Every structure is written in C-alpha cells, then in structure tokens.
Length: 260
Ligand SMILES: [Zn+2]
Image 1 (tube, rainbow, N blue to C red):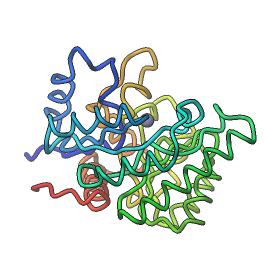
Image 2 (cartoon, rainbow, N blue to C red; image 1 turned 120 degrees about the vertical axis):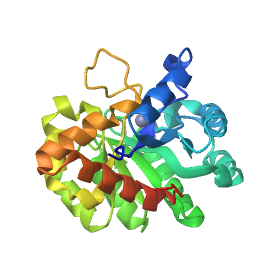
Image 3 (tube, rainbow, N blue to C red; image 1 turned 90 degrees about the vertical axis):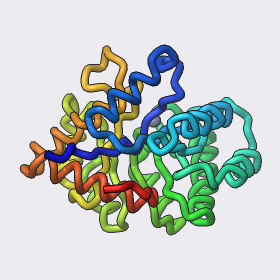
Image 4 (spheres, rainbow, N blue to C red; image 1 turned 90 degrees about the horizontal axis):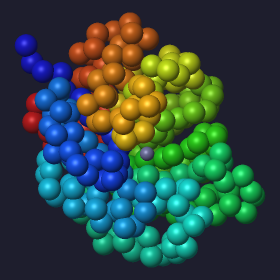
C-alpha cells in the first residue's frame, strides 16, 4: 500500500530545542509520510536560519519568512527593512510567515495599531510576490480576517485559529485556509473549527515545538498525523482522504512540485 502523504504547513524547525536532534526530527517526519515541512521565522535573524535549513534539507524543508507580531513590538525593525529582506530572498521562500496579530500579548491600542500596520504591509507584499501569507491571530481572528479581506489577499492561511467557528465560516467563503495543529486533541474550540470548515479549506500544521498533543512535551512535525487522524474522526472520512486532500490543498497553495 502507498504511504500516506502529509504536509506540515507551519512549524519552527529553527527553534533551539531542535538543535541536538534536528536530523532525527526531520527523519521521523519523512518516515511517517511527511513530504514537506514549511518552517516559519519569528524575526529577521531567525529568517536567515530558516533559509539555511531549507537549503540543508532541500526538497523537504521549505522557508516562510516573516516577523511574529509579538516580536514587532520589541525588535524596533522598520517595515521597510523587513520588506527588503523578504523581497531579496523571495526566490528562496514559499510563503510570508509568521506574521499577524496577537491581541492576547498586545493589549494596548497603540500596540495593536502597530501590529495592524505591519500586517497590512505583509498582506500587500503577499500579493506583490504572489506568495501565501501565514497568519497568527491569537485573540484577534475576526480582525485578521477583516484585514485580509480589506487588502484583497488571495492566498491566506490562518494558523492555529482560536476564533469563533462563525468567523471561520465567513473566511472560508473568501477561500482562506485553516491549518490544524495536533493540540486539537485537547481543544474543543479546534474541533468545532474543523466541523465548520470544509476539507477543501483545511491544512495540517504542527507549530512545533509548541502545540503538542501533550502540552508538557516538545512537538514535532511528525505529529501532523495526529491532526489528520482527529480531522478524519470529526469529518467521518478516512485518514487517507484527509491526507490526500490537505496535501493537495497545500501543494496548490505553495506551488509545490511534489512527485506523486
Ligand atoms: Zn508558529
């Protein structure tokens, strides 16, 4: 029988917690059928490392470059500098990410304004470069969707979406995608989300090293199979169908030229 093929659209392989055994982590993922891992950066220094890893694990690890909203407030990087970095590396990356809004971390209006301004800039860049945008929207799902709509972005991934299923249903109409982390096994909200969103709009992610099925352990890209199993149960379709569909969705979105 053919092996199930899976794609992890969002993780952080550059995280120091993978320093000791990164080769094994990648191998464990490919061993269970993961054919592509999109590693996301949290800041510009991290972006250099993410690109290096995408070159080291060529054909398996792909780079997404962005600055995480919680870093924007402290890094003092101008949007222009980040933009230039992304543009000059645009041939080496498959997406802009991780970017977005974090209203749990940024509670002040002033902080939220900064995040929104940057997200609009990243949205514009996503269109200019024709690259998908991977959006973090902690406690800000509704606002992130509004910005994507207002900016008329076409290729949108809402990762680990924590908003209401009704916002997700709306976003689905705009053609946006939702990537589901393994922490779904301990999240009623994520289960509701999967119920509300069609398989055509779902993707798998690990968000490793965080969002593990067990919050006390380090997460790994191989755990996207746990997301797939849970989706298969909720949607009452086979694991193979979930794998095939989410892999197809991701391949189209990222323009992966994977051999099937
Ligand atoms: Zn992340």
